[in-house]
Every structure is written in structure tokens, then in C-alpha cells.
Image (cartoon, rainbow, N blue to C red; front, top):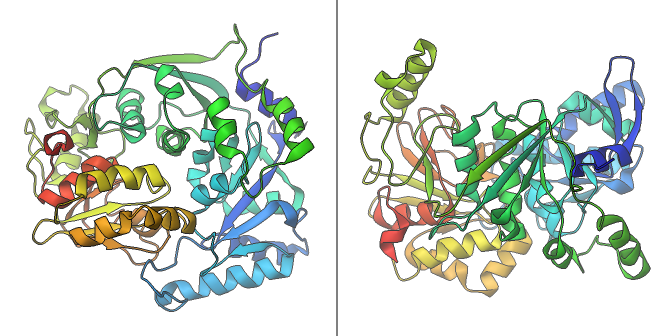
Length: 466
């Protein structure tokens, strides 16, 4: 019987079914971070249990670390206790820590793929909802809570209800300065923040096949914003080329054996999905959120919707609240709205191609008067590669702060936040009220649109700057 990629990965890792109906699924590798892992370590200590496979477990310092050059534990004092607890718990259980100063430190969802910790057809777990990012390599990943993490650390399996299967097929060549982030936002505008609930999502189609691996990682990063825990792209020749030679990738005979396993990792012709969605991406414009959830999206040339046109009173009230919070007017264009801060970074858009895209807009220009702009690479490796290409100099010459790798303004767990009432263009993944600081107005965008705002001081169509 033809099988989907999801079914192949799930069935290969299936262990048993619990009496409560949840399946036990084996986890190949997992990466921890300091905001949640210490709590799981405490739970293990109370029950007298250890980490079953410390060799498959890695610890990353990313959420509470400062982005300032020369940073130490106390540069962001409130994060010091988390960093110490992560070191102590990891040392107790024999887990490698990618600590401050480590040449491979960075955001877990950026570091794991670039080091080859995550491989096609594998399962992966992280105590962070954006674990789905690594699905860009054809892996099945799960974000998990602290209780789930304790269970995974102790047993190397996750207890989870088997989701249904959804395929989103995207076809067509994107328009200028539109990239993976814009595709993800377009999907969100189509299906909403609950459209993927209860499903594992496979992204397919010509748009996906022409997308870089970094772009596929960006797209899968926003799967959780669609309501789905796991999203992935079937691996192909581009995937295998991208992962070859990375530190944790198999070599020699092991590589040959891995390729034999990976090649069938695709959806068979005739395999059945529980739901199918097709979206035309031909000529897709750069996208921008207008409201306070990731599905409230418009193309850059669009206009803020009018709540009066919505019949459902609950939806109308939610739209009115979002527009009021964002300080916008129904029917108005967002182009020209003043912007006070720009952030380019996070596990969504902090890889080398993202920084190159932003630098192409910024080069030879200066940030607008009164503008605060940050670029924070997603990993130490990305930072080194960007500096080797001179991207840091382009940003610094423009008056943009060049930071050290960390999650930074995505959730502001390290103190990087905006000012009350400030309008921010951010390449992150969430724009909820107060997400990036009290009363901060966040618009989610791709790197090109963010860079255009940095140098103009207002929401600007990046196509007008080329």
C-alpha cells in the first residue's frame, strides 16, 4: 500500500501504543535549551532517574544569553541562573553543552541542522515549539513541554497521539524579494492559525523544490503557527548535498547505508492524505502581518481590512482589537507607516542567505534617523561565514548593531525588547500583543522588507529600493 512520508517515519520509529491511545515514538536525537531543560533535570532528580541516551542529547545556551560583544553570564544578569543550571544538569548527566564561547553555540534550531544532528527520516525533539524547523531536512520533529521532556530524557521515547496527514502543495515562481518567509505567511493567511491543528503537514510542489534548504527550514519553522506540531519537506538531492560532510553526518560506509535508508523517504504515488490544500505562489509579493496573530497577513501592496465587512461578531471584535492595538486604520495602506525598530534574526530568519538578502538592501545606505536596528546571526557558524563575506561591515557601516548568536528579540528572554508603543518590523515568528515588549506593535516580515524599513524609517516595499 502506498505510504506518505509521515507514515514511513512514524512507523519506523513506532514502539508501542499506550492504554490511553497515545503512541510511543522513538526519538533519534534531541537538543535542550537553558530556559526549560533545568526544570526537567530537577524532575529527573526527584524521581531518581537519569538520561537514557546522553550521547543523543545536546544542550544549547540560546534563550537567555546576551547578544552583546564580549558577553558573559552576567551581561544579562537575570539569565545567569539558567545558564549555570544548564551546565550543572548537563555535566551531571554527561551531556555536551554548546556554551558561551563555544565555536558552535547558537540557536538550537539553527545549530542542529547545520551540524548534521538532524538527518532525513529521523525524529527530533526540543523543549521549544519551533522544533518543527528541522522538518526542512525531511525529519519529523516535536516541540515538547517540561513533563514530556523528562519522559523523553528518561526513556528516549515520546508519548503522542498520531496526527492526521495534511499536504500543502505550493506551485509557481515567487515574485522579486519574496522568499520562504513570505510563502509561510501566505499559507497562514489562507488556513489560519488553527488550519493545521491535529495534522502533520507535508509541504510539496514546485515552489518548495526550487527553495533552498535554508528556505525550507524557514518555512517549516512556522508550522507551529499554523496549529501543527510537525511540518516537513521530503528530502531530495539538494538535501543530501547540503548535509554531506557536516560534523555529525555519517561518513564512508555509514553514509552509503544512510543514503539507502533516505532514498525511499518520500511520499509514494497514490498515498492518501486526510486533507489536501493547493496554493498558487506565482508572482507572490513580500508579505507583512497587519494584526496580532501570524495569520493576519497582507501582501505589501494590500490594505488593512475593514472589520465592518465581517459578519461574525466575534471575528469582527477580534479584528477591531487587533487594528486598535497596532494603531492602524481600516482600508489604509501600511506602506509609509513609521517604524522605530527593526530586528533581523531568530530561528526563523537568521541563516546566511537571510543575512545576505538583508545586506543586499542595506549596502551603501544608512539607517533612518531615530531608527534602532539589530542583526543577530542564528549561530556562531553563521556569524563566522557572514563576517568572511563582509556582511557584518555592511550592517555596521549602515548603523545597524551586529550581535552575538542568541534567540534575542524573538521572545525577549534575554532582555532584548522594544519600547511601549513602538512599531517593529521583525523577521521572527510571533506577533502577539506584548510579545516583544509591553504594548510593542510587531509586524512579521522577511529579511528584505525588514532591511528596507531600517534604511527608510518606514514600512517600504523593498522592490522600490532596487
